[in-house]
Image (tube, rainbow, N blue to C red; front, side):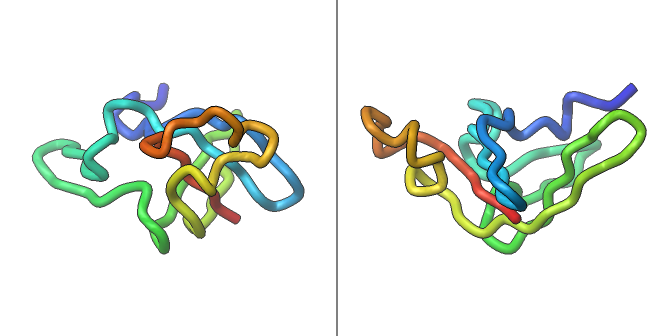
Length: 87
């Protein structure tokens, strides 16, 4: 079973090779502490993993912030909304 310590958000949209993720409140600071070590997460250039059953999908963060939200969801979002896009 996978640990929830590494959960950084929830996939909200997929378009081709692009994945849009709404970041969880628990990563609002951009830092995660796992087993006493600090990791910078959800930042441009960082790697992410999405578990898919017995396989994992990996990508590199290409955009963070409101503009990383899917276009269909941008209307009405707060400027402080935490979104991440990766390919």
